[in-house]
Image (cartoon, rainbow, N blue to C red; front, side):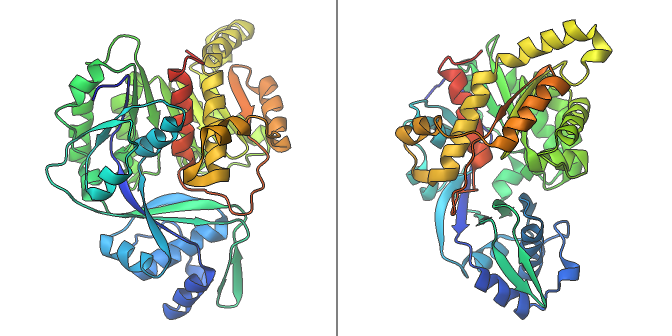
Length: 417
């Protein structure tokens, strides 16, 4: 099946567990975990390491993605909880979100099994590099705001609802490309690139990047390439991907966790000065044509000149050009926020009516304040506040992927460039 939209590069089978503080408390006691050893950076070679990692993320209220030494660790941990099987991967979740709006796509997959065949969006097609069926599940954990786990004499409480991903997935680690990809790209007006974050071998990564560039040469003139960042299992690989692909990317997108990972510091998302500094710094670090940062409070798109207007031309001319460049994606940005917010509130089963109704929700006052400040601090950027969503049991899994789907669907439906 050919489509104007090709979404790559890999999909996953996910085990989504229901949060249960009692299970985590029991495991902390069983393994003798102490608060002093909690870290999100230690390698995960056992179930005990996994427990330490989950509790460390809970302590900070942050989300993330980490590599585990074997799928067996995922299987053992997931079996302790109530869970369900879903599909993941940025491209797949984006496709599921887009199909609610009647926008279909062609997916590029690197693994396939009966779960995938059963759960893929029915209106979209796929190509795959997999020679045989295989299942290497990703563990997906979401914790609600205020989730509490006692560890020794301390009580850890989540300051924010968030999600965690743990995996050992050989097909996504090698990320072989389908021989059908060049032909699919010849028909595409939009190509989503994601998934390099799971790769483990530098030589294989370089080889795959070269193959992808060759395939992308088949894209028609004027096609849009959208790159969604993610938590690299080997952070040092980020630079290799940027060096190989940045000149081919039209829109480079990331969430707040990835922003902080790139900058190597935490960012107060409600402090306009801190946000401004972070956006200027990320624009210098990743000088993309258009840079998108999507967060729970606000989302922003910057044109290529947005972070350095004063260095390239008189301020008024440069800012005007950058603002015009970024403004072309304003409605796509709004579409991404709507889609992610709808999934946050309604989960997997949201409808077109849910999506359309979300547009009438009240904007987050704190996000409104940041957006207003950025109009003065960073005039070459377009910043849109998120919604005031206080749902007691939100869905935190796949929000970034849904943002991507909403952004791309808005482009496809003629709302933007």
